[in-house]
Image 1 (spheres, helix red, strand yellow):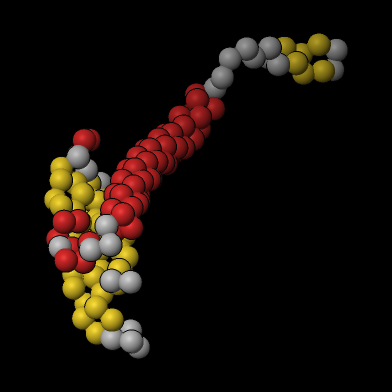
Image 2: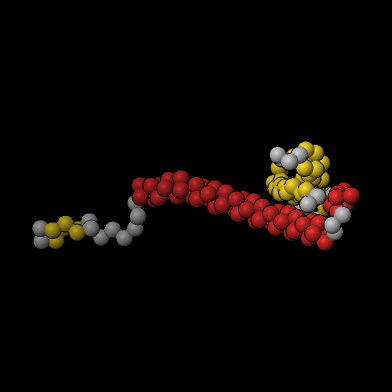
Length: 136
C-alpha cells in the first residue's frame, strides 16, 4: 500500500487467503449437490427409457393378440394360444396370461381377460396391460 498526495492506493494483485478459503467452501458445498442432482437425473432418464420400451413391447403384443382374435372367429375354443412367457433382448421379459371370467357383466357373458406384462430389472413391478374379450 502506498500513499500519494493524500490518497491511499492499493497495489494488491492477488487473492487473500481468506478469499481462497471462502471460494473453496462454496465450491465444496455446491459441487457435490450439483453432481448428485446430475446422477439422479441420469437414473430417472434411464428408468423412463426402460418404461417407454416396456409400454411399446406390451402394446405391440396386445395388438397382435387382438388381430389374431379378429382373424379367427373360433379363437375362444383355445384361448391359451395367446399365453407366452418369453425373454426378450436387453433384459426384458414378456408374459401373457389368459384368465377365464364366467358370468361377467349384466349379461353374464363368458369372458377372458388377457394380461400382457413386460418386466425389466429396472422396473421391479413391470408394466401390465389388460383387455377383456367375449365370444362376440
